[in-house]
Length: 45
Image 1 (cartoon, helix red, strand yellow):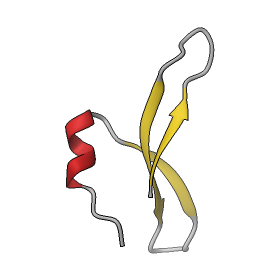
Image 2 (image 1 turned 90 degrees about the vertical axis):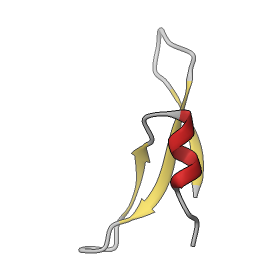
Image 3 (image 1 turned 90 degrees about the horizontal axis):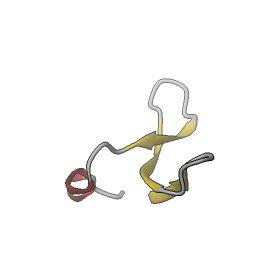
């Protein structure tokens, strides 16, 4: 799932993130995606 997370003060940017599920323990976390173009390589299942 692709999501946007707001940055903390004093920045007002929306960081590109993806909610992923870890394989080893099944926890869901938000992982930072470094560039805008990198979102195109992420497949949603």
